[in-house]
Amino acid sequence: MVKPGDDVDSADVDMEEVEEKEVELLDDAEASDAAEDEEDEEEDEDDEDKVVAVARDEDHSDDAIRLYLREIQKTSLLTAEQERALARRIELGDGAARNLMIESNLRLVVKIAKRYMNRGLPFLDLIEEGNLGLIKAVERFKLSKECRFSTYATWWIRQSIERALVNQSRTIRLPVHVSDDINKLVKVTRELVHKFNEEPDIKSVADAMGVEPAYVSRLMVLVKKTFSIEHPMGENSDYSLIDTIEDTTSTDPAALIEDLDRYAHISRWFHLLNDNEQEILTLRFGLNDEEPQTLDTIGRKFGVTRERIRQIESKSLEKLRRSMEGEEEKSRAEALARQASTPQTT
Image 1 (cartoon, rainbow, N blue to C red):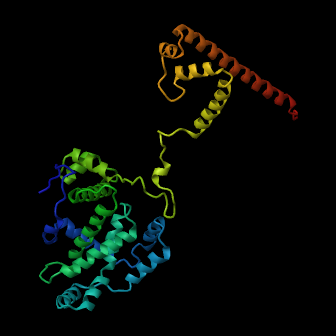
Image 2 (image 1 turned 90 degrees about the vertical axis):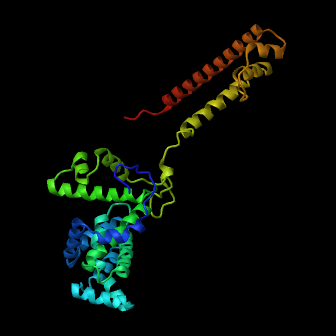
Image 3 (image 1 turned 180 degrees about the vertical axis):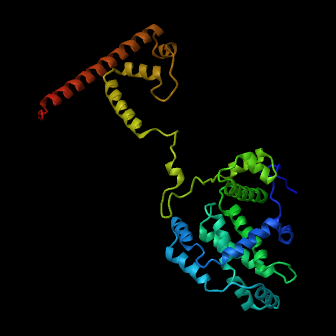
């Protein structure tokens, strides 16, 4: 059994082994939430404007979401007696009864899906996943269950949506038991905010969840959404997130242009030297992309003393310095001449 204190990176628990048991053992809070969903389901418009606003933010068509919401409201809600009658027919293989049971509870899926908005999946995807959970509930519901079908289906709808959030909304997949704890964290936090009208501290949330504050802190880190570095910047964009991240290992274009300009000047000045001077400076400073050589090594190559090589080096550098200064003086003079020839405006 996985406990709150266990490592959040441990292996997933096998949810298939506990699904039926968890449905059978719906606690009071779960049953209460399901009852609230039943009552909320009876709202005619189902907060249509709010839902459409969210869909608009997700680039969905207003008309498409409004059409869906209005279409599912055409099917009447079922009474407890009607649910049991349909369940009997479904057990006998009646496809029409199965379809009616599903269609009559689509509003319940929308109501539950709204609680998972802004958790990483588009609203229409949440509805789709919830509908899959509803279908599974219809297929597994038995008359021996001592509860309303909507109460039974609530767990399956939530489980399907939450499983989708685990598997699809994150770049890095979390173990199922950790995702369950995150869902509990969100629910408890929402309840505490509603009760005290302020954001609860970590200890208050931990006490309400029955876990250590350190574990809550770790869960809060996991709640933060992550993106793949290849995540597109827009639905129809050719750019991904990586295109917006600075490559600190690459050369700045402006600096590269400046270096190329400087290299062009140095190359021109360098050719003012004779062949021996050019070769000595090249070897001395590693200008041929090789390691700089010592005066002794260069002296042996030319058959002269290290002191003679040092003198040639100093003389060559002095030539380059004078050429650079002369070019700078010429540039300043040209700039002053251009400035003087510019007509003064009043």
